Image (cartoon, rainbow, N blue to C red; front, side, top):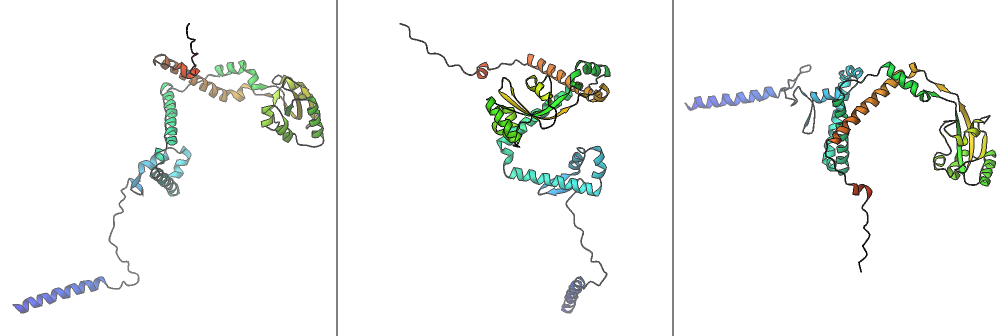
Length: 307
């Protein structure tokens, strides 16, 4: 009996030895060692994991829907998917770091988020009260065009540089300096007493004859570019002008402006509807305003004691 038990024990040891030998067998060239299958831990709806947070296919689709239609085909290519996933990962990393630094509790950040929410509320309520597209007829647009003729037919304009000084003697001295080659913009920025021309180094936007009657006659009488004109006395002081060019009249036909004009009129109508809506809200809103805050608290004059 002891011999049988001993024999069984020896066979068990030999079995283990053979098994370990097979496991340690050197892999022959060309043979692929089978690796045990491992689970990735990502289900089909998860496209990436950032720390402990998942980025899902739903996140991908939401981003995809923000793209113009023409880019969506590219976005579904391998290169496009990689780009979007990288973008989503970067955004999630920034979000996590933002919270880690406590910036989500920053008062300025919270205030700006609240302001943006209010803007979105206004946008969404406008869409809710104006659900149908506002269409402007050709007749409405043409009527506006005819009633605002000067807006679309601009008379001749002139482009000049300008500066203003207080004394005629100073103006004559500056004109001599300009004729000797000094820069008009530099002198205007340093010497002009007019805040507008001083801040713009003398640069004036183009204007028509009736827009600047104080200097128009002199400006439109110029004959050649860079001609210095002045001094011109006005209620401001003494103007010195450097003529740049004349701009011929510009006329835009109704057909040229029709579509942009219809879009503008539609915007005006939307705003009118919204303003009327606000008026109704205010009328029923039981509003009280602290007028003292607006006007400022008035100091009370101490009363004289009665005798």
